[in-house]
Length: 107
Image 1 (cartoon, rainbow, N blue to C red):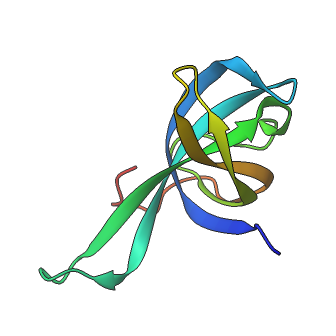
Image 2: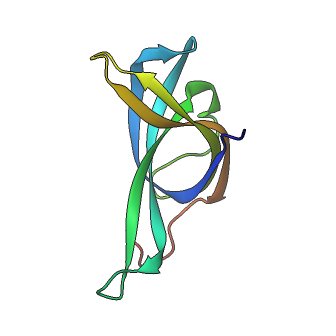
């Protein structure tokens, strides 16, 4: 069995540290904007915004809004405070690919 996810996208939002701990560590949620590989009916590429959970100990990597990053992680389901379940990407490794967005591109 394999539970591995690799995402490459541009950071659009960095949320504050969660008040809950994950396995004894604080985590921070970061939203990535990831373009789809196919065009829609209007001939443009749609984008998905996917939120990933990054342990606070990994935030030493240069993560800022507008940066293009690659994350490797695993999918996890955990219970929220309201007994609902939530699927999240728990990041295990981060690589910064580009520190600034290309000219003319919005974050």
